Length: 211
Image (cartoon, rainbow, N blue to C red; front, side, top):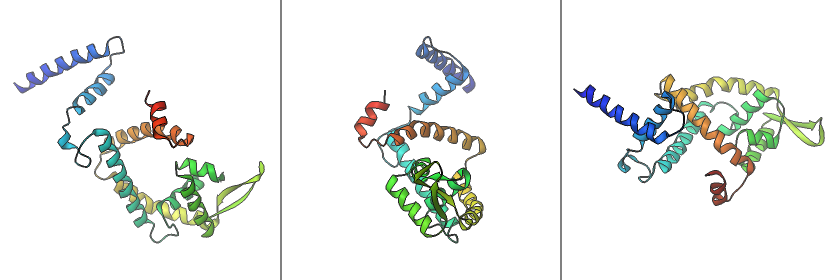
């Protein structure tokens, strides 16, 4: 009997979906997305355990918590390597993958705060993990690259960092990891251009990007 009740609910929801979409395309994928949002809207305030008042605030809180968990795992994984912070390793890994790059471009690739990024670079230079050299295309600027010591240590760090990455994924299945990655990529595609503009006034940001 329950299966017929479920089918009836599904028929009713399909009707609501078609009415809601009007002249837009109607596909299984768009229906699944609509249904997911429809069900999600029924979540009660009591389920917002951290902030207690909105799904947006709850999402921001959980993303912040995940960042702190990840940093803890990375620091533990790299404890015997010459990286003072997780960002030291992250900057070095970017250089290992991309090759020579300017300071500003490196910081932007990490979507990091400029002043904090410069501190990371200074620390890596001091510890001889990276070095700077004249830009052959612009003698007024300098590029960064890994030293031999830096390359050796970043290669050692990959194995340990992978252990930390597996911990961050926790109990998620492969399908759940793929879904989460797509969602985070979508968020990054939205936020990265805002980061590049370096606008500090939140009201102006909201006015421009909430349209």
